[in-house]
Amino acid sequence: MPAEHPETSWPQPFTSTKLDPPALPRGLVDRPDLLRRLIASDASLILVDAPAGWGKSSVLAAWSHAIDESRSFVFVRLGTEDNEPRAFWSYVVAAIYGADETVPTEVAEAVAAPGPDSLRTLVPSLSNSLNDSDRSIVLALDDYHQVTDSAIHQSVEYLIERAPRGFQVAIASRTDPPLPLARWRAAGSLEEFRLTDLQLSTSDTRELFANRFRLDIDHADAELLCERTEGWPAGIQLAGV
Image 1 (tube, helix red, strand yellow):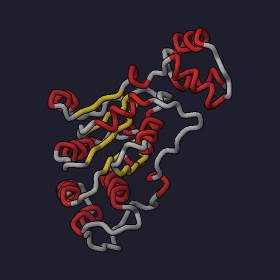
Image 2 (image 1 turned 90 degrees about the horizontal axis):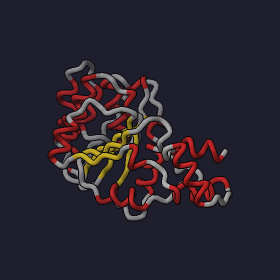
Image 3 (image 1 turned 180 degrees about the horizontal axis):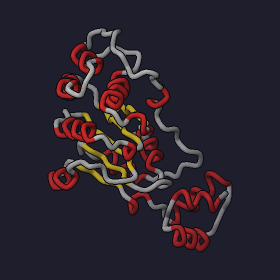
Image 4 (image 1 turned 180 degrees about the vertical axis):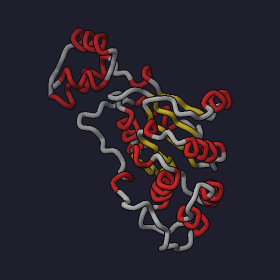
């Protein structure tokens, strides 16, 4: 059991809403094939990479709510203010253990320690703690493109490389993160979801119009809309509006 460590100091001010899971969007389209891939994957890193408006956060939300998914999900919604190692990892640790729950002593001490050298202790301690846990966890890092600090990328790489059994990292980003994706791809430890995976089909478009706008559009109109928007979910919703 983790030891109580009430003196753990989170970044100030600590914005607890950054740890809230994304809400399921109104009129969400059921995409069973996409969810099956996510649920079945045992890759250390799940990468959802697409420009704005392609439903990356919605995919993570739907996955976390899937009936057949037994793993626990924790979320960190990243912003430019998190582009500093101590702030970044404070939120990650708070998400994994719960902002108001106990944290293993060695992890808490490393998070509270000043200076960049604390990462040398923090990430190995976190990895060891997760390895000792019997929880199956998906750590979802939303809007990871906001992060540009090389020390953060290196420490995330370290955690993914040494991910214990039952622990996955899911990254939603508008660009490829500077991580060794090619090596992980070759090793089978990377699962990727890109534009072609996130595009809405004709049937998806009809379902979206029915669910969200209570409109029944015919197959030909849905097909034309998909063609003109290239299946871009935000564009299709704008057309509905």
